[in-house]
Image (cartoon, rainbow, N blue to C red; front, side, top):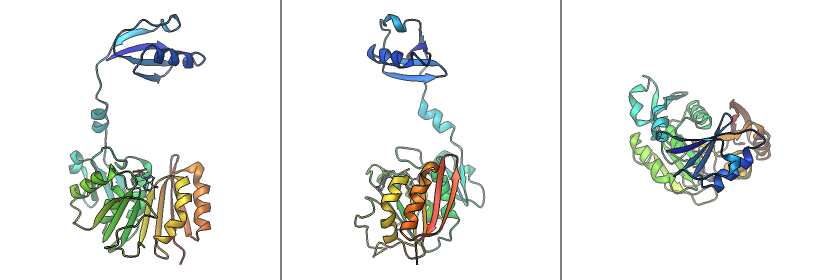
Length: 270
Ligand code: SAM
C-alpha cells in the first residue's frame, strides 16, 4: 500500500486535499495534523504539496481487526456475542449471537444495546412484538429469546431480510416465532399471527425525525397501554420525539441516555 504523508496546517489543508485528489489519490485520511493520501503509484506532485514523504506500508485488514476487537455486550438479561465468542456468554444470561455483517445491529452501538436492555426489562412471555427497522434482526430475535410468542421485523432495506433470517436460525429461534419482511409501517403486515396489525410491544431504532413522522402509525400498531421503545435519537433531538408522543396521547414517557444517544419508552394511551 503506497501512502504519501503530508504534514498539514489548518489554513492549508483544504487546498492540499484538493490538490491530492487532483493528483490521483484514491483515498485521503487525516490524523493529528498529518494527511495520509493513498496512491496506486508514485506520481509527480505540484510544488505546493511536495514537502511530504512517500511510504510503502503493510496492508491492514480492517475487517479482521474490527472482528478481533469485538467483545460481548451485556444488555440487561441478554449478552450479545459474535459466533466465535459463544463460550463467553455468562451462565444465567440469555445468549444472543449476531454475525457482524452488512446489516446494522451487532449490539455494539449504544442504541441497540439500550433497546435490548429495555426489552429485557419487560415481561415478554407470550407477547407479540413489532420491530420497525430490524436491520440484523437483533431486537426481534432478542424479543423471541426473551419469551415473546411472535416478533415481526420490518425494514425498507431488502439486504437486511436474509441476514435477519439467518441470525434467527443461528439462535435456534423456533420456526414461526420470528418473521422478517421488506416494508415499513403503513404497508400491509402479514396477518397470519397478528390479524389486525396491532402488537403488544413496538420497538424502533430509527431516528428522531422519523419517529416524529411515524408517531401516529405507532398508535395504530400498538394495543392500548402497550409499551413503546424508541431509540436512534440524538439527545439534542429529544424534544421532537417527546412532543410527538405527547401529541399522539402516549403516557409514562421516560428517557435513558448513553453519551449522545437517547432511548425513550412510553405507553400507548388507553
Ligand atoms: N434494529 C437494529 C438495531 O437496533 O440495531 C437496526 C437499526 S438501524 C439503526 C435502522 C434500520 O432501519 C436500518 O436497517 C434501515 O434500513 C431501517 N429503516 C430506515 N428507515 C426505515 C423505515 N421508514 N421503515 C422501516 N425501516 C427503516
